[in-house]
Length: 142
Image (tube, rainbow, N blue to C red; front, side, top):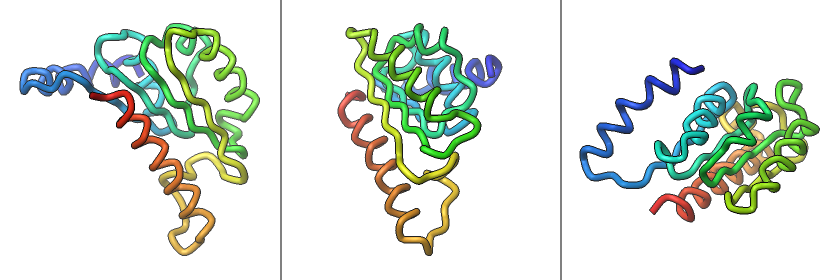
């Protein structure tokens, strides 16, 4: 994942060269690990959203330096709700960094991108996550 986070830096530099001053990054599962690594630096991105997280360490959560939203599934063997709760405790201990941790009931890992478009409940849950992500960026990426 270190290589993936390094690979994003030229893209971010290109955006900055075009006058972009504030960047938000979203990551899903393993992409969330990449976003967490970017969020640790504090100057590469200005806000982060991670949906159905991957293997993010407690140290990374402790080291996050930008506003972060962590959107998790109730049914997730990869990042169980207990781990989500632990991440919430670590993030909320940092009063200077705004965080949002939200558990989506009844959904499984990947619910926000891999869902049955004919299942109204699945669509509703995915759309809610998408809206939460966009609202986070509206609030924190100027």
